[in-house]
Image (cartoon, rainbow, N blue to C red; front, top):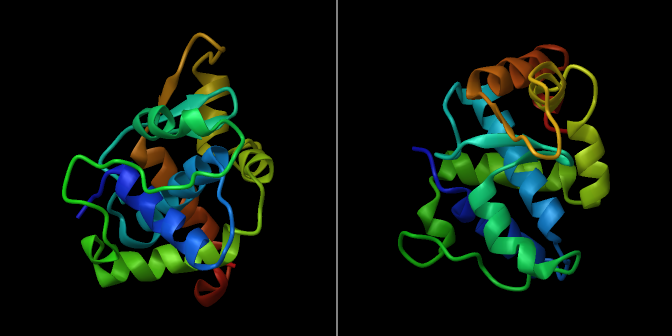
Length: 166
């Protein structure tokens, strides 16, 4: 089952809150994208039911950006509004929660800028969409799930499966 980007973001907001940590909009947007990539890589199914776009500072799900941009560079302090039922961890199936826990463990220590830099590397889905499709600050190229899936499957194949999320 694919979820809204807001539902996945709320998982990370909840994790941050439970650990007494702050999560910025940029971190949140990148964490949702990275989780979506690992989900595609492991399960060949999308985690989110929304399109990822290549923006100047990396991959973005526009609906999530629109909901968290009001925080600027500060911490997102409350759950993001979703169109479905109110946020609850139970909204997510156990397999998804496990993957999101692993993503959080591996990436929560990175700043939004660091996560953005990770997504900007040569041969990443963002790089392919932005540079090969003529990206500019006025143009947001779509990053297809096929490209994201291929990238994360390659990451998985290049490492020991049990260490792929580390």
